[in-house]
Length: 462
Image (cartoon, rainbow, N blue to C red; front, side, top):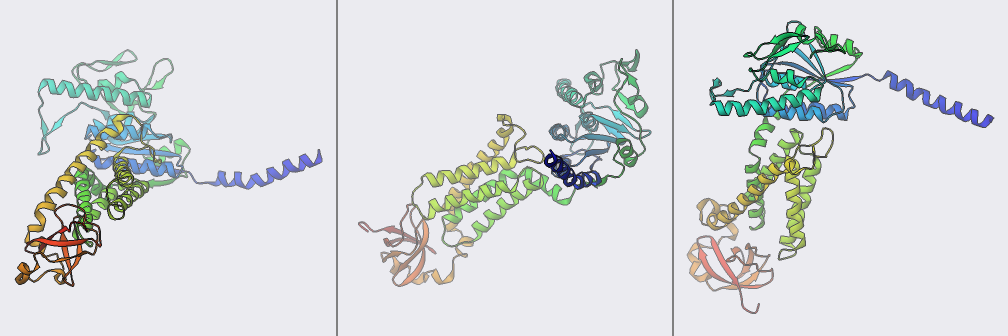
């Protein structure tokens, strides 16, 4: 009995410092500004902020909002990010939360507003290339309005608000009443001031939309019991703006990168094709990593795929399991790098076909484009003056002795795939085949000469 009591006391004393350390831990709050126009670059900031908050085990994420609205597709992505985190999320409306801003705010279960702030008017508008509002045909207007109304209802349900209240911000043909009083007449979009948004409704006397009016973030933190929290404010960086550009041209980067690597494998040495291909693919992964889509595991999978493909091409002639495995890993790395993932995790948002359909389409288009680039470049580049100038001078034959080279025999110094090096008449030359593979040490013969391009064939019986 005494032994058991001593054991319990010892365990209690050992656990006491840990409890004290946990009690003294400073709360962490991430503040993500949603200000000015909502654009795709903002999606990356929100994703980065929520991702860091998850990794740092933050106590709250506060979206500090003052926006006239913006791109609906960007708002939808931000709503999805908010819905996929278990960290408490709050929206503090500093001044305005119109259109896409109102939709994002309603996706968070806790809204607080500053004095004089407003929220609402979320009807979709089409912007002209010059920046003004462009009139839409009636059928297009109804289609867009219906889609946005469905999205705002879903956002309101996610945040725990009345879906009809949310839809009244989108549709001007709706009337909305609170406590028997019409606050939004038919023909007008619903827009609420901070006082209107915090009025109590229903039998439970719940706030209509806002949980209260606060002057600033510090006052909000006091209400939430986080007055001593460490505030981490995120901003849009130049790298995140670059990430948006990279994401928009991802298929082109993949196409040029794959095409460059394939051409490099088909030519001797290491030159401009390999450098350009690697640069394009590094830029691709760099942009998607900043965007919060790609992780280091995607780069490692891609590198492993390239290694397997290189082994197949340079060490085991033909094309079998190694080559197919390499191509499959490269395909997986590209698709994974462009797929939406859960904040703080490698996992995709879900494993439905819709998550991977667009990345898959981009990758397939890139593979087809890379194939045609390699095909066209392999056919026409050797004939260009710029390409011939890249050949090392010591392996270029004397143009006055072209006729003398025809028919000379030698052996392949490297595998010819179709390009490589050979020893002919005691000289090391850059040569190509007519497209067939010739292993090194095979006996060969020069059959054609086109400027600096020496074409050889394998000797029969060699």
